[in-house]
Structure formats: C-alpha cells, structure tokens
Image 1: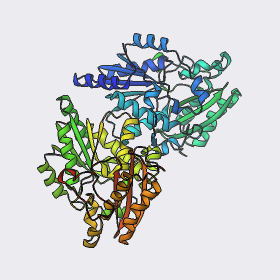
Image 2: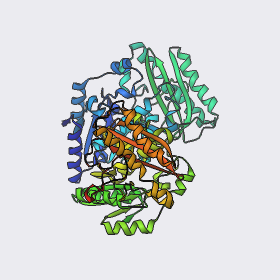
Image 3: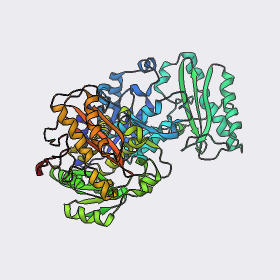
Image 4: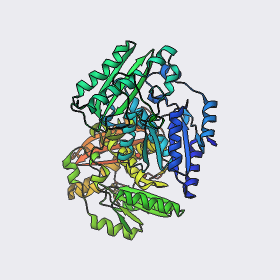
Amino acid sequence: MKIVTRIAKMHELSRQLRTGGLTIGFVPTMGYLHDGHLELVRRARSECDTVVVSIFVNPTQFNNREDFEKYPRDEAADKAVLEHAGADVLFMPEASEVYAPGAATTVHVGALGDHLCGPTRPGHFDGVATVVAALLNMVTPDVAVFGEKDWQQLQIVRRMVRDLHLGVRIVGVPTLRDADGLAMSSRNARLGEKERALAPALYRALGAAVAAYRDGEKRSTELCNLARAVIEEIGEFRIDYLELVDGEALAPVETANDGSVVAVAAFLGGVRLIDNVSLARPQMLADASGADIRMRSEDAHYA
Amino acid sequence: MKIVTRIAKMHELSRQLRTGGLTIGFVPTMGYLHDGHLELVRRARSECDTVVVSIFVNPTQFNNREDFEKYPRDEAADKAVLEHAGADVLFMPEASEVYAPGAATTVHVGALGDHLCGPTRPGHFDGVATVVAALLNMVTPDVAVFGEKDWQQLQIVRRMVRDLHLGVRIVGVPTLRDADGLAMSSRNARLGEKERALAPALYRALGAAVAAYRDGEKRSTELCNLARAVIEEIGEFRIDYLELVDGEALAPVETANDGSVVAVAAFLGGVRLIDNVSLARPQMLADASGADIRMRSEDAHYA
C-alpha cells in the first residue's frame, strides 16, 4: 500500500493511473477505521481497478475545537487494517495544505443542510461539502463510496457532485451494524460499557417506526412518536432530533411513503450518536419491542 | 471545430483527449466575442494542445432578469470567429442542464467578493464561482484562461481553484483595448455613439492615478481623487466605485504599492463599465491629461 501525504503527489498519481487506463475508487474517511469503513473499501474494490482511501480529520466540520481534538485517532491501526483490506493508496493530506493560508472558499448545499443534523451543527455540512469537493478534486476518482449511516451527508454529497458536475459516481453503502443492531461508528469507542449496552435502542426505535409503517401507519407524527417512546423508555438518552423526512430532499414529510427515511440523533453519556433507516428497505427486521432483532448475517449491513 | 452541447459529451471528449495525452486549454466566455476573447483563445492555444471555448450566459451571475436578457448574443458570429481563431471545441451547455431541477449548491469565496463590484452586485461572485467550478469540472482543462479586465473575478477564480484543489492552472491575460484605450467588453456594444466617445475617460482616469503613483504619491485617497476628477470632469458618468485595493486580497489599502490595483466601475448611458490597472505595470502609458495615450501596438493589451 502506497502512502501519499502531499496533494501534488496525489494529483500526479491519479493522473498516472488514469493515463494507464485504470479506474479509481475512493473512500474518504476520518480514520479510526472499523468494519463499516472496510465495507466501503470492499465496495470500492469491487467497482474499480484501484482503491484510494483518505484519512483526514477535517477541522472545519467540527463545531468546536474540543470535539475535533477528542475525535479518536489511531494511525498505526488504520494502516494495518487498510493494508490487510487491500487498499492500494492511503492518502493522508496535512490540514495545513488542505487549507492553505488565506483559504476562503466554501461550498454550500442549500436547504439540504437545514434539517436533521443541520440546526445542531451550524456550518458542519458546509465543512463537509467543501472538504469532499476538495478531496474529490485531489483524487479525481471514477467512483466515491460513502456510508448510508451519514444519510444526510450522503445526500448532500450526491447533490453537490451533481450540481457542480464533478463527473464522479457516488455510491452509498448500507450501514454496517454490530450484532445487537448498533450502527458502527468511530464514536462508539467513546461509549462506556453501560452506554454501549443501551445504545442499540436507537436502532430498535427506528425499527418500531418501520414496523408500524408496514402495518399501515402513514402519519409521520405517529411513526416518530412510536420511535421516540422506545428511546425515552431507556431514560438515558437526550434526543437531538427524531424526524421522518424525504430521503432525497431531507425536508420533513407529513405522510410517510417508501421514499421516506426516519433519522435520529441522540446524546448518550456525552456521545452524539446518529442512525437512520429507509422505510422502503425490506430487510429491516427489528420489531417495535426491541426484544427480537433477527439479524441474519446477510442482513448485517442493512440500515 | 467541434460543437458540444451536452455535458456528458464534454466529459467524454475531455477524457478521450487526456487518454490520448493531449492537454486542454479552456476559455470560458459568455459569448458576443471580441478581440479580447480571441486574445484569450490565442493564449490557450499557445499553452495547450487543444482549445475548448465555452459560451454560456450564466443566469445566476446577473442581478436581475432584465440585465440577463439584455446581455448581447450572436451565436452565428461567435461560431465564425472561433472557427477562424482555431478553437478546437465550442462548448455550449444548456442552462437547464447546467442547473438541473433542484440544484442547490453554491460556491462562495469569502471576503474577496465583499469589495469592488461585490456591494453593487449581491450574489454575483457566488454565481461566477459556482459556474466556473462547474465548467472546470465539465471540461477538466489543464489550463484555464481569464481576462484581467475582470480583475476581481480572476482573483476569485484563482482563490477558488487553489482552495478546492482543482488542479488547473489559471492564466490571466492583460486587458485588450481599443485604440483610444477603452477596455474591450461585450457591453460596449450597448453604448450609443456619444457614450462610446466618452467611455475612454475611465482608462484615462486610471492612468492619472498610475502617473501620480509613479511621481511619488502613495496616498490611496489622493490617487483615487485624481482618477475620480478625470471621470467627473466629463459629467456623464455615475461612478459606482473607484477604489485602490490590494491586487490579491482585494481589500482597500491606505498606502499604495506595486501590488495595488486601481479599479473603477461606472454607469454611462445605462451601461455599467468596469476597468482596472495595476500600479506595477510599467507599460501603462496613459497620462493624467488624457490627451496623450501613447498606445504602441505591443502595449495594446495592457491594462
């Protein structure tokens, strides 16, 4: 696995690969890699000749310095894991080069950042859109792979790529989950033992909404109330939002349909967790009671 | 000359050219081409194997529908002129494809849009930065060529390209002028005969500032007053701004130096004209009286 840190070097390498007729699959990450990331790497591998993974903890998408600094990092482990997963290139640009002195450009993706995580994280999605645009320009991939766990991010990236005609195909990969349903996330490492045991309630809550939708309930408020009840029963969460939105426009809808997504963000022991499910996903097996999440192995990466 | 209107076709063509090892020089325009544009085409020709010229009257950079609709257009003449100038590809995307339904992404280049034309044209430079980012992504050139006449635009594009790591080299070309010093512009076609005769006063005004700077005057206010006096003497202009700014940061400076630029925008008979000169340009020959603009042919394209 080749390690590249300079942007000019990455540009040059991408150009060489293209000239050689090789396609490039790109997985942008903030490191502290887990199986969810490796699923993205596998997907990139299956789509392209070459796989580039970036690790860049982007300062501009954190809402404060402390959250940025607390973000978990383990470069040595990440390298080992990527080597083993068969990534061809690990791209680790320096923040000082990504954001040169005097950097003043931001990419803003209209109303898509206004809902869900938007209000709690002002500027976050501008930070995401800007750094993703920059990374895509550095790597110039044919395909870029993102997890559906960050549903809003995925939609914003899709829209940005379409609007700015970036000429890269964006692939979304269903969320990989632990056996108890918790969506894999680098932030899970910050959960205490007790919180870790409670955390899957988020997925059960979403499952409650999906189950009710399948049983014929279409009223968004009712579906959200059902999900909220599952979380509130635990008592330890502070819900940031729990919304039923259009899966592409991300605006709340009154009446649910197969294009809707239920998304939640909640704080648990100081850690902000997010999760979402699409109402159309037939593989969603969690039921409202939460007692019976029948995860078969082939369902393990469905949200 | 090949004419391309579909964005996917442009992407494909650029990819073919690159795979064939050919470099691409790009000249984005809004059409109604004059010799100033052809100078950009010649520059692109001298830098690259292939020259792509785009014509796209971008609706999002006009401040009102009327100004957009009044913008002069002459597709047949433009085609003939570009054919003759040896452009390889004329790219004319449709607005409905450039801005697909639901388009929501804007590129914003911080404080560089706050001065000069910024206050009078709210949103203009976001429109410019966004469409230039999109066009650069469609054409993926090695070099893109812009006129120095739109100095602020050129600086904003440079900054955006650097910040978003677009991997394209931006080349600025000195302003081409008519024999009497008027900066070439598609908008000049909208000037009546009387206004056309008065219009070179803008260039003479800038020349007055340059001459005084060379004679040792460094106070920005004084230099601007000298220039302003030349324009006000005519009586027919309404000055939008006349400022002395840092040539890169575009913020007003109190004390002029070789990195400063004097820029002016003024309305004349309902047409908004802009012009600028760099204080460092040694070829600037206009004098304060305006009586003697000694334009030698090799100076004809200096601002």
